[in-house]
Length: 315
Image (cartoon, rainbow, N blue to C red; front, side):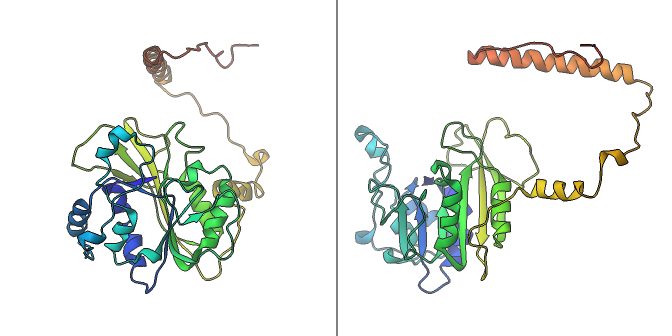
């Protein structure tokens, strides 16, 4: 769970909209590791055109997060900003910002396991931030129901979650989960897109690509892929929706109105050049096979290979 400046840029619109509400409350899922200092945060916000509220030096707090860091490496992290001071730059008082976590090890104000229903006295919050938590929670259904309870009417939830990180958490996420869950709960979708960022170090130059759902079917090579979703709670939501995947709801509805028996289409007639095209497709398939073979060898992976029988080759 952490925020770099690129992640903060993705979160900025929701924070800006929330701080306009008098007495607005923010809930963070897990204590955030902030990878920037106070001066870096101020310079970044100025470059983004955000009017920051200065925090006196004596009141600035540095991180007590990065619990995974070894003691001998602490010098790398000790000057990074604490999340309470970050939100003070936006005008939020310390009492307006809470953290919920499963344990006390990073000093969260609220200790609760999101696998379990949240107590009714928690909330409501005007902004709930999930930047790297839900993928670590086994009971996703209960956790998302909890978020629906914690966000007040007119409030927002913002997710930023992994889409292609093997063994990082229990799950990688697809846009359809958020779109269908919040859509069937009656919430308003404000933002939903994938974020691809290079795996290689790019120094102080930040680069990422926004990809709308449906633009790609497989994660791009050489990029980390995340999912950003922002949703607004209406006055009369469905409190605990059991989401059904919208793609298949539509297909099932369509199938009730038709049958394969209605189809009279025949196989297309052969075309001039079909043989050449088939030969070229076979050559490309063979080249792709040997590339995959070499890649598997480089990885030191167990290699499984066999030939599928061609159609029409008999039993």
